[in-house]
Amino acid sequence: MDVLLVDGYNVIGAWPELNQMRKIDFANARDLLIDKLAEYQAYKGWRVMAIFDAHLVPGMEAKTKHANVEVIYTREKETADECIERLVSKIKNVRTRVHVATSDYTEQWTVFSQGALRKSSRELHREILKIEQQISTKVTETNQQKKASRIQFNEDLTKLFEKWRRSD
Image (cartoon, rainbow, N blue to C red; front, top):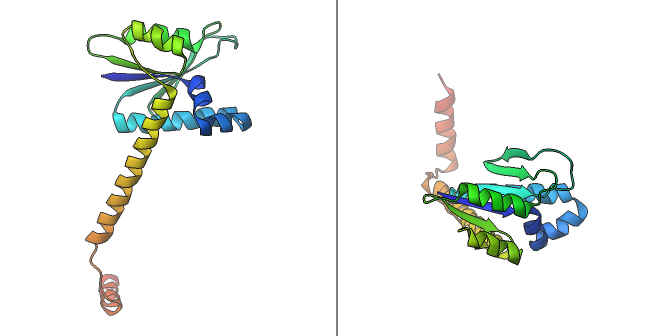
């Protein structure tokens, strides 16, 4: 099994469209990232976890699930990096490959030394754009196949069939 751990705010800061959006509406940028990760999860079939810093917010760690993406807000006095490191050591085993998406170079090497695979925010962005393009192409092809499989009748024949369909 593959697991993707995403340093949420780091990725938001690294992706041009999310970085612009966060200046206007931070929560909306976070929600859009989670939506894109949900598409990624559905396409790849991986377990995906988005981790967001809440170390300045008093309280316990909060976990929610949005469209099969596990969303974690760290506990008080814990950074997303610390939470990711804890999760890597907890999840990593012989059957599970852990990928960590962050552009924090120090964090990449820390998780790499724990046996996780590192992926920069930019690499994740390119991969998601490619997946979105592949999904769009597949949808277009499917729609064209559906249209091509329909039998086209002239207007008179269509009216006759409609009359038969409506009569008892």
